Length: 130
Image (cartoon, rainbow, N blue to C red):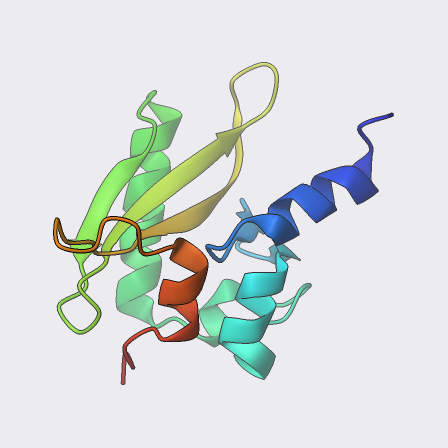
């Protein structure tokens, strides 16, 4: 089996967390199935991330990119108190180590009482962020 774009997309679609990859110009270049379901029409491939993020978010993203350009990898952003998720900024690098884009990684909350709860089940019943 060749690992091509179609296979990689299928792998990312099988991943229960949303993935929205954004390039250095802040244009959304890829969304997996979970992201498309979660964000619907609010986020579109080919559009600016800042159509759904404000100026404060832009400043934070630019600061994360500067840190990534200086060698940092995944960086903690915040604890979302509405959902209980930890959020991380994840730079994506090319083969030479240059940051070519980024995505945000959300970590679902879990408890010792129910460690077997799957990510997919969590996303289906995710707390409302609004």
